[in-house]
Structure formats: structure tokens, C-alpha cells
Amino acid sequence: VKICWLLSIYPMKNEFPLGLSYDDVLLEPKYSVIKSRKNVSLRTDLTKNIEINLPIVSANMDTVTESKMAITLAQMGGIGIIHRFTTLERQIEEIKKVKRFTNYIIDNPFTLFPEQTINDYEELTADTGINGFPVVNKNGILMGIVTRRDVAFQTNKNKTIKEVMTPQPKLITAKPGISLEEAENLFSKHRIEKLPLVDKKNKLVGLIAAKDIRKTISFPDASRDKRGQLLVGAAIGVSGDFMERAEKLIKNHADILVLDIAHGHSALAIEALKTLKKKFPKQEVIAGNVATPEGVKDLIKAGADAVKIGVGPGSACTTRIVAGAGVPQLSAVLNCAAAAKKSGVPIMADGGIRYPADVVKALAAGATTVMIGNLLAGTDEAPGVIINKSGRRYKFYRGMASFGANISRRALDTNDDNLLYDNLMIEGTEGLVPYRGKAQEVIDYLLNGLRSGMSYNNAKTIKDLSKNAKFIRITENSLKESHPHDLEKT
Ligand code: XMP
Image 1: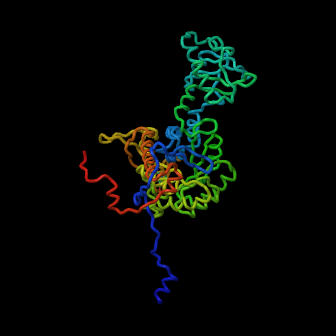
Image 2: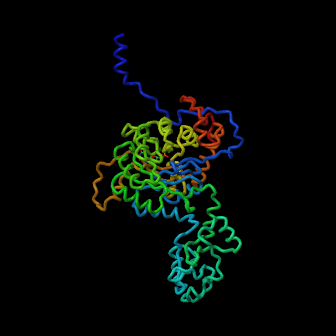
Image 3: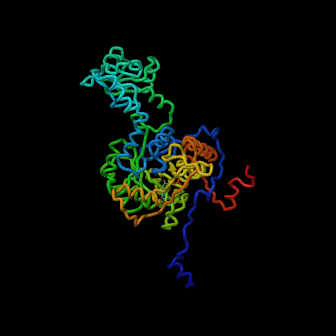
């Protein structure tokens, strides 16, 4: 009796909760009325106020997401987060590249004056890569348009634009409010490539290019802002110049800011988030990373519009073996999603995705999006070159707290060549990942798995998936059974 009494006031210290990873579970198949995998919707909440058509987000890492990756992801319906391990100017340039990509209404088109020459045309073409320009007078009134066709066979490069342009009375123009469909009709009816937009006084107020319309139409699921430009996110830290970075990124139309540090459940992160949301209350901010319900609640209280979950599951992470901190990712997502449910703030599962099934499990556990590093780092759209090694192709991938990334960051912060690299926080590693071709193929592979997983769970939507999911814990033997076995290698 005495022992029992003692135990009740001094509970056993080794009664720990169990933490599970994606590999520790499967989803029990359910009676399903889904006739085809095509009949499921992958539309999901990215933040409180932004929905996207696919639950895939590319990681804000310097070997994963710059403009190329962000463009591909957004065209397919997901989103990329441009990393912050570079100068502010370069980060902004990457945002601008995404925004310019399908700018189906160009607000400030490049223009020429009638008095300029073919030489000027050629110079502007070489600088911008653009072949046709509206011609305006000093007051911005549209006078004509000059395209490659107009100058192609001109030998006298000193001829004025006025002499070669198509002049205004012959031009097809439109009002600024024209819809995508109306613009498309004008392009095919008149076989033109550029459509200047003018106000009542014939002042040039914008331009639509046929090329951009084609890009827009061929990606119906693309993630777009109100102006038809692709959505893009940008990462920021929590100290130093983070507010200046945030302000400039917002000014340059970053749709989402990702306030991202390794230990997001910290006074530093919470204060930074509060400051950010106080100054920019309308800006959507995803905050992280945390791995506990308390972390989620504190970030939501501080103003997060979505919370990023994951301490240590990433393929290039060493946090768990260096600091001993972390929560196995499936449990982290399950617990955090439950904690966020009432508030309606979405959860992003960040790191540890190795198979399509992991995406299914993360969303079934309550996340609305998954963030991916490793699987996308091997694609053409990730920064970096293809490396040939022993007849196989690879790309380089590194954790953002790896030795290499630490050194690059220090070099960015200072011009001192005689740096002493002390006090480095190494909680990540680096290595080669198999070259995987186009990012679209990797994403399609993940999404086909997801659609299949949804049909096994009788889930027409991602919300249904988390509602219907019934996890079953498995043993090491079941894991062996799950993977291919008893086959000779071909
Ligand atoms: P995957 O598994 O897709 O994970 O490669 C990508 C995520 O890993 C996180 N990350 C790190 N975590 N040390 C860490 O502990 C690092 O150096 C590091 N770099 C990236 C990050 O959350 C990313 O999205």
C-alpha cells in the first residue's frame, strides 16, 4: 500500500508518450464509392485565406526553391517558397521572375518613343528579351506598336520607329478590364501577338501578350493572385534585418511570408511574428517550425495564418542526433493538427516525405499541405548542376543548418576574408540525391499516389481524407511486408 501511495505522488518518470513516424502506420482501406482516382479534388487550404489546387509546397532551401521551382509548382497548383539564404536583392529578383512569368496583364510595359530608332529597338530587345513594344508619345498616349516583323528587313538602323511601326488607327486595342476570354478571342481573330490596353484618352495603361495567355490557359489549376500572376512565397528569419526583408518582399508582391526557424516555439519567433503581424496585419504568414500542440497554439495566438510542423524529420536534418530534440513526424502532425482544428488555421507537414504514401499519411493525419525538400532537390528546376558520379547522375542537396550552409551564410553576412568559423550550429548535413528529371514528373508521381490513397479512404476531398482516415500501427515485420520482397534484382 505504501509503495502504491508513493507511486501515486511520484509518478514513474519513464512513462513516456509514444511517437510514431510515417513508416509506423498504414491506413485501413475503407468501403469506397469513388469510381475513379480522377474524381477526387486536391484543393486545399494553404493558409487561413489562401486556397491552392494541390497540397504540395517546395521547401525554402537553397538547393530546392528559387524561381524555376516556384514557377513549376505554382503552374501545377502548388506553391514554392523562395529561400532566404541569399541577399535581399537576389531573393526579390527571384520573386519578380515568378511574378513576371505569367503576367497576363503587364502594368508597366516597356515602350519606345516614335523618335527613337531601330537601333534603340534592337538594344531594348537585347536587354529585355522582348520583341514587340507599344510606341507612346511623351504624354504616354499610344501612337503605334513596333514588332520584330516591322524591323526584320530594315537595313538602315537609323530609321525612326515612327517610319516602321504599325500606327494607331490600325491597331487593335482593348480596355483595361478585358477578361482573359475576350483577350483570347481578339488574339485569334486578328492574329496579333500583343494587345495594348488604353484608357478613354488613348493613354497606354497596360499590355497583354498572346504568349502569356497561352501559358495561362495551358495551366488551368495554377495558383494565381488576383492579377493572374503566379503565387509565390518567401522565407524570412526572426532577427537582424527580418522586418526590412519582410517589408521589401511584401512590396514586391510575395503572396506569403514563411517565418521559419528551426525552433519556432521560442520567445524570439513569437515576438518576431507578433511584430510582423502588427505592422502587416493583412499579410499571410506561415510560421514554424514546431512539433507540439503548445507550439501550435502559441504561434496561432501570435497571429500565424498557418503553422509549419517538423522538428528533425527532414532527410538532411541532424537536429535529433545533435540536440536530442524532436517528435516523430506522424505524431507531431496528428497532435498539432488536433490542436489547430478549432482555430481553422491550417497545418503544413514539413520534412520526411520519402514516398507518395507519406503525403497521404500526412494529410490523413490532419495537415492540409506538405513541404518537400529532398524529392524535389534532384529535379531540373532545383538550383545546381547535375553531377555525374560513377556513371550515375545526381544533384547536390544540403540542410540549411549544415556546415556548408553555415559557411555560406557567414560569408553573406560579412566581407571579412579572415573569418574565424567558430560557434557554428551544425544541425544538418549535405549529400547527393538521385537526379530525377522534371519536377512535374516527381509531383505527378506523388499526386497519383495521393489520389489512390484518397480512393482507398473513400475521400473525395482532402478534408474527407483526414475525417475518414483510420490509422493502424504496424510492426517491423509488416514494414518489411509492405516493401517489395522476395524478388531477385533484374
Ligand atoms: P526533406 O525530408 O524533404 O525535408 O528533405 C525538408 C525539410 O527539412 C528541414 N531542414 C532542416 N532541418 N537541419 C534540420 O534539422 C537542417 O539543416 C535542415 N535543412 C532543412 C526543413 O524544414 C525542410 O523543409
